[in-house]
Image 1 (cartoon, rainbow, N blue to C red):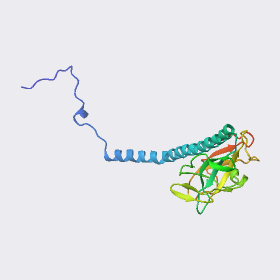
Image 2: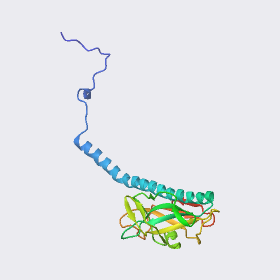
Image 3: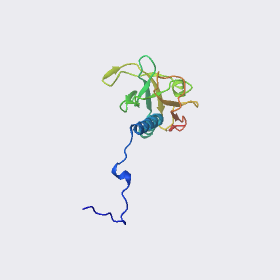
Image 4: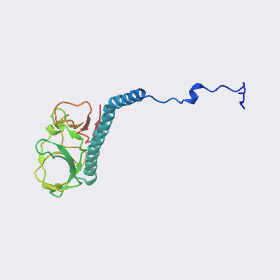
Length: 209
């Protein structure tokens, strides 16, 4: 027997019997929009990541320079921070350490520390005056990464017992930049960091644009 619908009950919506779904065209539009967003935002993420690595590299060098200064003052002797050219065919100042003058010889005061593989120090004299402003020295035989090296060029920054340095002039700075294409290109990148050593106080500071 047919039952009459209660007139007070709302009539079922016609679409309720056939739930709507995304069409293929709508899905393609969403995929295209998402791909465009990824393409547009990826450079920004890469720039942020490169900036953080530059910050870490600059902070690493500032910490090493500060430790050299503090050690010289605490021990009452000369302490030198060495930045070594680790390159083969081109200059690549990548590893550094501390050496302390004890008795009548320089002795290692720390282990070798390397910069991040994605960061380089620009060796152009106008961008890293510290490299051009000091006299290179040659390292003795040392081991790093399981290999033995002899007479590698090194940039020394020597701290005296009073905390000052043997540096002179205003160009006591290093410029760090991401490795993009050929290393040590003279062109300045948009993303960079700089470490400056005050020759009078011996204090090192880092800054980025």
